[in-house]
Length: 338
Image (cartoon, rainbow, N blue to C red; front, side, top):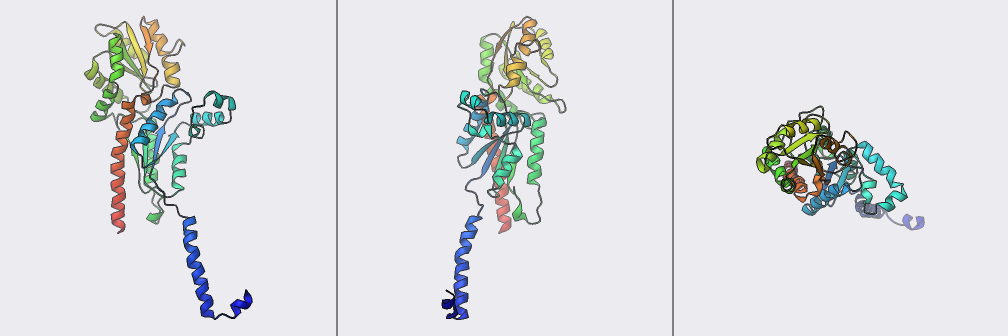
């Protein structure tokens, strides 16, 4: 080979080298190419450890995936404790054998930041994050802080922004103390539950999560919306802050035409630990036990809101509004670059 090269002129050798470089460069570029085929969508839920309750989250995922066929759809759980439990179960052969329908992604579920980092590793692309929370509470605020921080990163070179087009969809009832159009849409989704209570002559009592640090006004507004639509015997209480179950029992007791029975239902995306234990459990301090001790007949509706297709579609609608907003921002960035 060296004998052959010695017979070639420097100009010919240079031409050979340039040909090799130009041939190899596209191959190296392809090896490091990170242009994704699809935009991405992340559904961020608090999560649940109840295998049966997962169906509500998976139903939302399936309806979102059907509505956004051009997106890669991912799940994220914001609760550290819940994710740890699923990781432990991943190594429990007996548990997995007893629950064959649980998707692999649940055992490997990440938090929102982890999921976003994995998405970004394939290249900067349009990303929609949808909160599966119900109100603008602590969990939603933390999620909003994360997404807004990522969107607001200022690299020295704009092209290096890891998340140039990212946005967060509103919780089901909207931000702040709830927004009228969202309250109306959510109330409409609960029509079957309100009808079930009406037919049995029971007061409908919804258990929300609530929070200690932010306003609870949204629950009062939503209760008013439900009563306007379905009648006065609808009550909302929460686990974490007033109105608590004792407040609800007192309110029902003071109402005209006091009902003799109640239908308890979770105002939560999943019928998880709160619904099965705090609401419907046998312990003396459960909502069911307290209502029974006050003389009421008690029935339970142990289905998370995510299993209600009409409620799941609320998140689809929020995502469509978010997509329009983020796509416009992406197009504006593209116009500036020209």
